[in-house]
Length: 119
Image (cartoon, rainbow, N blue to C red):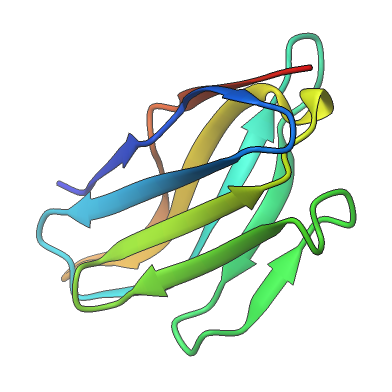
């Protein structure tokens, strides 16, 4: 069974910084794309950033230049460095991983971590 455990959420002032972490555990053969999505109250879940196993990244236009996604393949961990956050970045942030196990390949999600940006 694969689990994704997120940490690092909380309250941050606009213009500050925050780093989210997400570690995968379980009987994992390989991890393909990892990423972060977010969902604000009353809105649909949206992509924030993704990173492939080779390190190629993709960002939502709204966070380009402010957020940086990275990963440590040995630790099966993905990070999201949030610099200069804005109040509109307030949301529950969900970790995502496309995981291959011995008998399947599918998407897994973390439980979500709240990020609140105060003005």
